[in-house]
Length: 611
Ligand code: ADP
Image 1 (tube, rainbow, N blue to C red):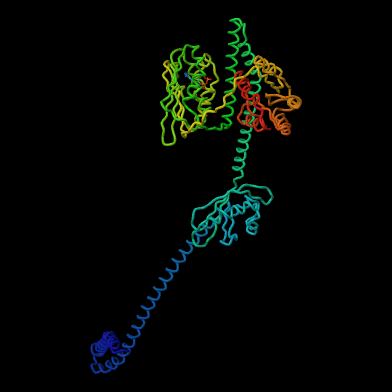
Image 2 (cartoon, rainbow, N blue to C red; image 1 turned 45 degrees about the horizontal axis):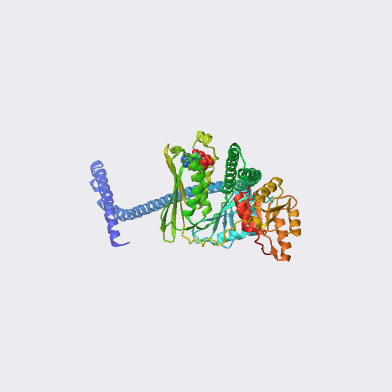
């Protein structure tokens, strides 16, 4: 014990000692002196003896009290600390319990999600081993998640698809955008389904591959159904085109006889006026019918996407004049003037001239049809830009005009401004639709400006490269020499057509011998000598293409080939090309135009060439 502690205890014990001594003195005095009246029995010494015992005792007791107090304080402090530690432990336990509840809730939700996902989720290690598969794999493939985890990666896909998907995965970057692939997947029961999978590499440094897959069989089936329906629609459209081509062929054949004999009759002498007028009507009607047949055939080819442009150098000014010349007769008959206004120095261009002429001619025919009096003007202008130019063609009429609401629709197929107009003027409503497709195919523009009752301006604009015109062919068809005694073999199965050609050619001193099919034609060529062969293509027993090939093979031995001109209602470019490829020299489309027939005979007769 330190002196300070001793001092402390003395100070704290002193009052107690003083009280004990004082009380003993007072009791002794009161009892012996006041009550018993024996002052001699009053003994302060005894008191001092008591005091000397009470002092140390009191000191000791005080010390014990102090110790007990300190122990009590220590105990209280320790109890406080224990309580605090317990509170802290309770708080931590509560927190842990809360976290556990949250965790198990999250886990429950994840499991719920995993169990009820319709999509499949899988995780793969960077080495290509499976890490996790959601239970939805069973619904999709029929394999349990455990079975799936044990399957080799190639088990459910074809080798080709596996390689393709590996390629997709190989291009992924960690944390980068996902990539996806469709592929056919074979289920546990062997049936095939389509899956669409999305692949992504986790960007957390683990390199884990996350794959989510979904069953897209229904969608794929729908896509395949649509593709099939499209294929069928295309096949139907091709069948329609074939049908139209056949129909037009069948229509052309009788038209050949009608037009041909009407033309023969028109040229014959000694007709009465009435007969001549009636023959004129037959010719007009047949020509109209022919142009309708041509339009339908043309349009069916355009619809089928079969318009192949054939660009070549052409002279726009010459095109305008020849188109104007073609409608001149009809215009004059209606009292209309046709004027061509071509800008000075129009440069030749590299474009499909015949197709542009078709558009211009359609504008002109309509202008004549829908104009009662006045003038029809063909105007051509050109803007040259470097080695290119934009050509603008216009046909301006002073006719009935077109109401604003009809101006767009008349460029649609079978569309006419209104029913009354079509009844009054006739027509198929195909001409402008064909024209629009031609111009659009040339990446140009087509349109109409019009004031009702005053007239219309139909126009087109096309861009194309400037071109040099080739030098005109020196060799013109020589005039037909009736005395030359041309011997012609006509191979044609249709008796009416045989008679027609004979009637057309014999007045010009041409000797026409006939054969009614390919076999007879080849035989005739074997037996006789001819200056020219006119060969139909579609014939029974042997067609014209086969007959031509046989004739060419036969001639190969002789070294001299007789010109063969196809004479057929097959007028499509590819059909013409087939004729030439079979060994023919030229092509005449049916119905036969008498002038063109005579030109062809004049051009080819006597032009035997090396076989
Ligand atoms: P079609 O003349 O055979 O009926 P088109 O396609 O050439 O077919 O023309 C469609 C319609 O456009 C015509 O029926 C007519 O109503 C209108 N049309 C065309 N050209 C003219 C024109 N120059 N003036 C007035 N209307 C026209």
